[in-house]
Image: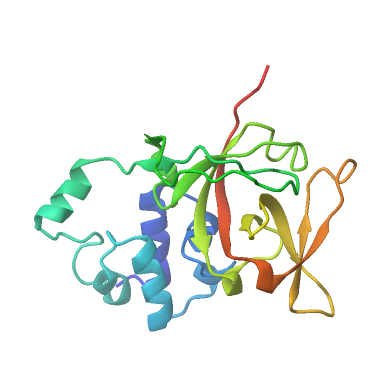
Length: 215
């Protein structure tokens, strides 16, 4: 019978995404799938199950049964019958460090049908030039909320404080674990910023970018 690692690869192939994308979507850490042995910790199973409830965890652990859950409940049928829709919020997200002065609605403007981003929480627009060319002015980013402890240095995140919302690459601050470096891509025009972790209210991983070319 195929091993647990092979079953993980099989499920990732079924999702039609990269192994790295799967690991990020579950907050498993880089290289998790390639290093997994014959058993897997309960905490890791919970992370996978939370991100992909359609996966039959018993099949993943033992190889018995079907790869996907076959729950015949009304809820499961509804989920399978309808595409996963991503809520889009028309809020001000800056690619600089500008303050946000306006109080904005929490009701989605509309929903996007993008299967590749089905495990994201929502999509929002971003403005500014500090992350070009990786994230251009006027792009839409698909994001997923993560805990501050699970942040992967070098990845792009939406950081929310009481003063601003901004998208930057997060890096560690050597010698001071209480702070993080917010690093722009466009270092020719913008400087990085040192931020105290205690000021961060929420953090979202940027899992996808939809470029909206502004003419």
